[in-house]
Image 1 (cartoon, one colour):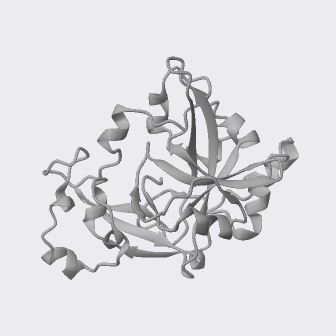
Image 2 (cartoon, one colour):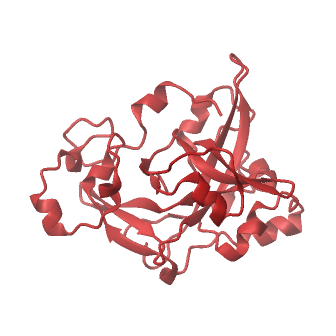
Image 3 (cartoon, one colour):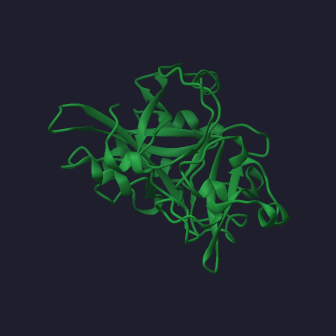
Length: 265
């Protein structure tokens, strides 16, 4: 799965990397993005690419409530052409989710140990995403949201987790975004991109348990740590329940503020 990531670069930097228009003008410096947060994505209309901000957790257009998206932050690549929640978006509304790192947790008994996954060359990872537009029946506001596609792990990820996000290689960015690729033959080719990244295309390292709690943010969350650092640190987040209270070793997935409200597009 992919339940947390960092977006450290400004959207102007991302616009330069992806040759897109910056429609957000955000500074980046986000080290603990969680489902239901807004995040920067790369989308394309006709031949025009843009960096914009959508809500993480796809809300299908037919949903009665935005709450549908709260658990639809990931989509299994193996079933996207059969799952009604994602089938239309795969055919028509693909996006890239640029991240500087994503986090995964290895379960060690009752403890989950966090790891960061980055590109060895320091460039952003472009995760495969799908997006949708949903109209709030009460306010009339349109909420645009996205999900991240996941697949099985590569050999490096296998000891940590049995799923990982799909990373689209730079050579295929334009192909993935191209809104004209809608025919069955086109989609079969696109499905060929939904494979685990090669082991030499990612680097994995331990990070602080502080990332378990979505209330924490800052560059220390992506800094490498070793067992001695964690053993001597005064870090109550290593034992944070999903609601942030002490007493269990589970990462907090959803920020409380996001579960109470839906952000406009």
